[in-house]
Structure formats: structure tokens, C-alpha cells
Length: 148
Image (cartoon, rainbow, N blue to C red; front, side, top):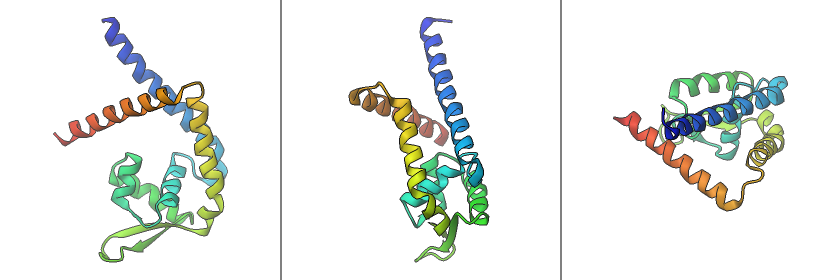
């Protein structure tokens, strides 16, 4: 294995470590609210975009529609989200936060912001911009690969 291949593997290992660490932190933070297993992310995205459709939510989070549907169903049952008919296409559903979600809004946004700050601490704004650009290229490349 070349040094280049080793470095590429290490990047993915580091990304995996960050993801697992983030998930563990989030699961501990949101356990009492039953928002572990990344369910809190769905609530944040709906709080950011009230009236978002299921497909747009799945795309924003980076999951398939079935996974999004299951998570949203639990969040509706637990009283965090409300499904309504789309204003012009009644067969489609759009999502809105409930009072229960709105009561957690500040805490959810603060958790997300503080977590991002913790992981990006020590990077300059130029380094953060470079990281963002590179990760976007990787993500968009994977999306293109999945279309083939």
C-alpha cells in the first residue's frame, strides 16, 4: 500500500471517528427527549425550514426516503413534528415543528453550533472554507456515482 493510499484510508477513518464521536455526544445530550439516533437533526432541519417536504428533508440530511419516513413517523408520534397536506399537492405531506419542538429550538441550535465550534476549533476561516469545499466535492462526487 502506498503512502497516498494510507493517507486516503486515514481520512475516512478520521471522518468515521468524528461521526461516531458526534453521534455519541448527541445521543447522550438528547436521550431524555428521545431524540437520539440523529432524530434531533430532523427536528433542527424542520425548525430551519417549516413546511419542508419529505424528499427535501431526506436530501438535506443525506438519507434515503425510507429512513427519513421512519424517523419522521417516530417524531410525529412523539409530538415533535406535524404532517400537513402540501398546499398545492394534497397527496404530498409537508412537515412543521410542534410546540414541543419550538420549546427546544434554542437548545437544539446551540447544541449544533457548539458542537461545530468544538470540532473546528483551531482552524482558520480559510481552512474551514477549504475543508467545506473539499467535503462538498466528495459528497457531490458520491451523489453522481450513485446516479450511474
